[in-house]
Length: 386
Ligand SMILES: [Zn+2]
Image (cartoon, rainbow, N blue to C red):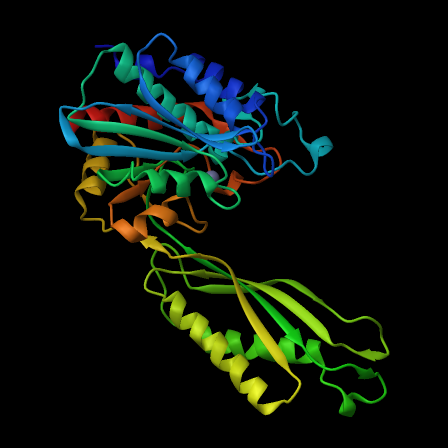
């Protein structure tokens, strides 16, 4: 059997990651089928069991399965192959689709989030195939489209029930080589207020939509504030990230709307938060005739957490120790594809991947090549050990 460290060398990583970065899979078009085609081309010499899920318009997701000795359960990897767009192309130090290497880092859109993690899983798969290994359990590698938008890829994988036999799910999103055991939830609300217009000089005759909108927001913020603090994720937060309304200085506005981005910690119940919003809106509407407040849920993903005592976490931690890597835990402030699968199934998970999560969605996004090699080493060791 090949020595793992030698196998996951930076030369191989550079080659695969550069090819992945050169394929533009930015949202909203995604074009993830081009990435799927490339991934399949890497394994053309092997007789692999795969399923490509076609979403149309050159978009698809991919599941590759390596059969294990135990046929009834799987270790599953879940990673996305789309990226966020590039907004300031000319301001990047190196072109975002070139895959330039400098001082041990590769630069490019998606390098950290998360083509670096995808590269580490591809290497893991290559190692199993080249060494003709039959793992104890099936190993499933899921590459999803559309994670950065509506999660079309992971939702269609959920429909196939392919992940239901998972013993555990490994999410190779960037965690800076730390053990990701929690992620924040997200509840995005659109608040639309309709009032009554009047001349700017006669506010007494109108119902000012903007003023009621900010009164609503103030009261809502106050009522959902919680003392609870999570050791890795801090507090539940709320941020007003969009606000529109008004037609002119001298007109009492009829319409106003805002978007609120609420990020929750485990244990914070989204239904309760929604109920608070609805109660405040109802109270306002009862009090003011001609006032309408509509609440729209734009995104609703619960927070996730796995216990440090879970076997998956304990085993990975032991592997880290054996390899002499730091065993810090981490909580992720953003959500992953896991939030679409894990809450309904309670499958143990870990978010564990190369790259600094603060690099995600940034200009001059980069990932350390040695970090990809380390994470591939951990994935392979885990599959061999379990
Ligand atoms: Zn990501």
